[in-house]
Length: 180
Ligand code: CTP
Ligand code: MG
Image (cartoon, rainbow, N blue to C red; front, side):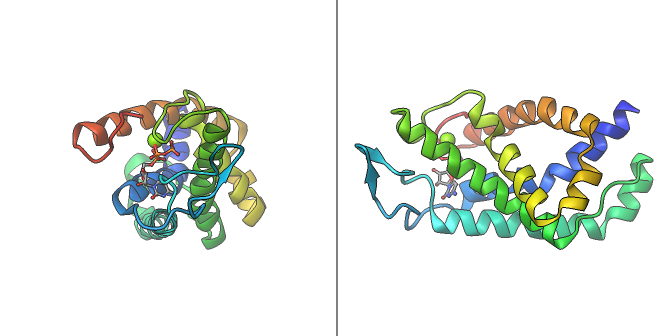
């Protein structure tokens, strides 16, 4: 029972987990805020770029389509009927994850945190909130059907753990300059 919940929750969130990591690999180039400041601090900062956002969103959508292609065998392997991603849901999860992360940078700059500074709690859940909200807007029936309350509970508990593990890993590999 709990195993089925965890499998469903993690599977459904993969298109939201991939974009931030893809952005780290693809980032660079023109910052979204174009260097503009607001009230003495950058609007978003150099860590939020058009290229990183586009690449992250595309990666999330492509991974969702790839998961759909292996849904049958994967569901059989874990003994759970894993959710298939509607295209609009895939876009919502991926783009929403990127927007949540961008929103967090906006809040970090407003609270005097420089680029790369940690904001515990926000760092781990910003993209979850963004992904779920955008998926709900673009594919409401799908989102409500997949993210039941127990699945949501697993997402909220498991995501910060996964986030910390992947970021420490990316830091250890030299892909990220901070371990958060
Ligand atoms: N990145 C990007 N575009 C995004 C998100 C991330 O280009 N929309 C790239 C940037 O190169 C960024 C790196 O991924 O430096 C790591 O992302 P993140 O930790 O979110 O950014 P920070 O540099 O830590 O900046 P911030 O303090 O604003 O989060
Ligand atoms: Mg960061």
